[in-house]
Amino acid sequence: MLCNGGGYLLLTFLTDYRFGLFRSVPFPVHGWLDLLTGIGLLAAPWLFDFEAGSAERNLTWALGYRS
Image (cartoon, rainbow, N blue to C red; front, side):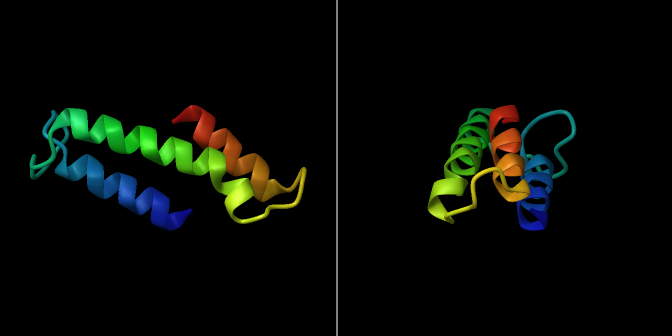
């Protein structure tokens, strides 16, 4: 999950909006990447064969649902 958080922070710094430091990624692209991340998190339990009811499955679903 550190990779996911670090990647999101990097995307925030690169996005062309108020808090962006480098402003090289257009805001609509940021939105699409958020959507793809959420879909990936929701699919992770099947992709990685997480055990039913496990903390890993619940975390990825919660993060994916929030995205």
